[in-house]
Length: 143
Image (cartoon, rainbow, N blue to C red; front, side, top):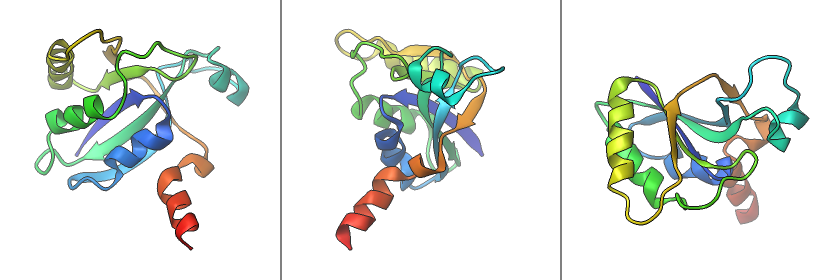
């Protein structure tokens, strides 16, 4: 198993992009790469703690490649949008192969790209009410 961590704007939509992809074993909406100690929820959501809204994706590389995940990443958000307090375009890599693939894929993008590529730091799972938000609300609307 492997993990990918992407910031793609709102984590609700980002999680939904990957949640049912064959080879993806789990997704979590949350935050990454902010300050570790003494951070309140208010500081996280204000941007004061430096966190980024992300989707953490556990995947089986024998079934879906990191490069395939990158293709979905680029196709499903605006990589040129200016960063907001906790919402930004980011690829947080977990190993050297991911770093190289992320850099190559960013270079291949047309136009201006502001996507951050950085080592994956600590991940904090978002509130339970935010997990699989799009899928849960679509199911509720269908009832």
